[in-house]
Every structure is written in C-alpha cells, then in structure tokens.
Image (tube, rainbow, N blue to C red; front, top):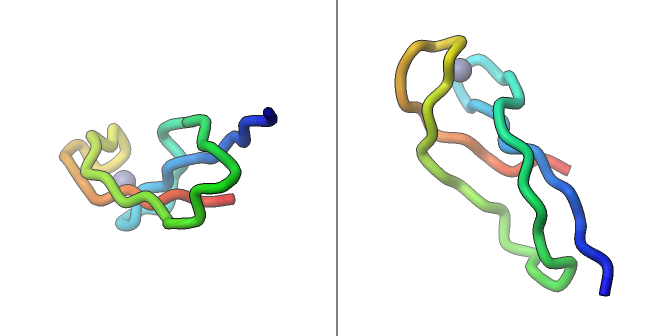
Length: 49
Ligand SMILES: [Zn+2]
C-alpha cells in the first residue's frame, strides 16, 4: 500500500515546516498547532498536497 507525503504549512506565513506521511484513503485535511520558527510561536498548520 502506498503512503503519501504531505507538508504541513503555517497558515500565518505560509512556510512548510513539517513533512508527514498520510494514508491515501484519508481525505480529511489535517490541521494541527505546531511551532513555526519563522513566526517564532505556535501557529495553525494545514496539510498541503
Ligand atoms: Zn509561520
């Protein structure tokens, strides 16, 4: 079964700070709070593809 790579992008500055692997059958777009070193704080990150 193939896994897909997705990036988590900061919703404030738009930089892609994290790379994750997702199952292909999962269509929901992931939204997590992670630390953004560009913003210097925790921001909401969204999955991009
Ligand atoms: Zn940011």
